[in-house]
Length: 138
Image (cartoon, rainbow, N blue to C red; front, top):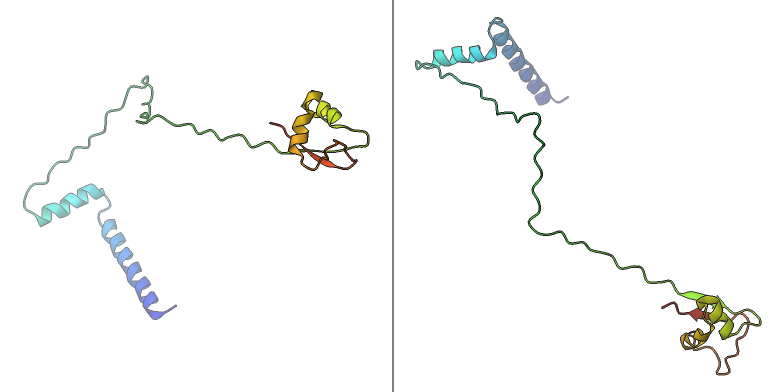
């Protein structure tokens, strides 16, 4: 350790020892009466009596106080639902727009919806196996 740290520790221990010695010289008195004695010795005026006041306790049967209500109404923010994920269909041999609409919509008359969403379908509406079609779900 450095010399100044050692010196500080020695001085601190000395102050604590002096305080302990001073307190132990009058073992039959409490701290409050020791303070009154030192106050009387330093000033000729009489000591002021201090009365300890405890706050009133509520009766045991009263409910706890309710917290204050907010001054402004709370606003509920709802998050919008996630957009639906696109649905794709891979054409199998023998499928038609009519059969695909029946499979996904349970309504074969909606085949035009699938045709409008897929620009890669030829004019003759002929589907080839492994074609990937977007199925609109809105």
